[in-house]
Length: 337
Image 1 (tube, one colour):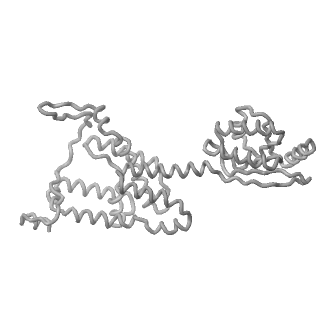
Image 2 (cartoon, rainbow, N blue to C red; image 1 turned 180 degrees about the vertical axis):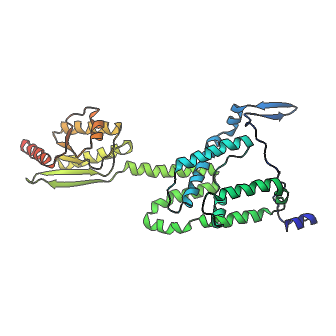
Image 3 (cartoon, rainbow, N blue to C red; image 1 turned 120 degrees about the horizontal axis):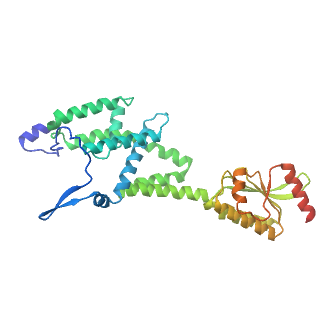
C-alpha cells in the first residue's frame, strides 16, 4: 500500500523514508570529530564531546541498565536474575558496538515483547533475530522506506500494551495505599517531564519513603513486673539504630523514663546494626540516666552492636544477657531506692 501511494505521488500517511543499506565498517572508535563553523573546520576532542553531553553521559547508561533489568524481571517467569551477568553483557555489547559506530545498546521492551508474544522462549531467538537484521541490512533496506510509520508504531504498541499492569492498582490500594504514591508520581513525572528527570524523581520519592520508615521505627513500651513484683519499663525497638532514627528513639526513651521514674530495660534483640550516631545517642542516654540516678539496662545486645557502643566508652553502660541476672539487678536497684 505504501509503495502504491508512493508511485502515485500522493501518500496520505507518513512513511519511514530512506534507510541506508549495507553493513557498517569496522574501525577504531573515534575520540573526536570535525565540525564546520562558518568557513573553517573545528576539531572537537573527547573532552568537548563529553562536556556537550551533559547529564546524558550518566543518565543514558543508567536508563539502559534499568530498562534491561525491568525486561528481565517482566519475562523471568519466576526464575532468578543475575544482575551482574546482565550488566557485563550490556558492557561487552556496547564496547563491541563502538567499533561499528552503533547507538548505545540496551534491552528493548518493545522488541522483547514482540519476541515473547511471537513464541520465543530462549535466548537462542537472538541468533535468528540478528541473522534477519543482517540480511535485511544487506538486501532489503530499499523496501523499508515504504512502511508507514503508523504500522510500525501499531506493532510496537500491540506488543507492549500487555505489559501495562493496570490490574495491580486495585490490590495495591487494598494492601497499602502509600505504595501508590511512588508509582503514580513516577508515571506522571515521566509523562510531564523528560524521561531521565521523571525516573530520578521517582527514585527520589521512593528514597523519601525509605528514609521516613527508617527514621520512625516501631517501638513497644511495656510496664512489666519481675518475679519479685518489681516494676520496670521494657522498651523494644523493632529494627537497627542508625542516623535517621536515633533522635526519635532517644526522645521516646527519655519521655517514658521521665514519666514513670522506673528502671528501664531496652530489649536489643532486634537491633542488628548501629552506627556512630547511635553510639553518640547511647552515650547521651547513659549520662542522662546516671544524672537522674535511674537504672538503664541493655538486654540481649548483639556483640557487633555492643562493640560500636563501647567504642565511645559510655558512662554506666550496662549490658545483660541472662534473664536471672537482669531480675537480680532490678531487685538490687529497688533495694537501693
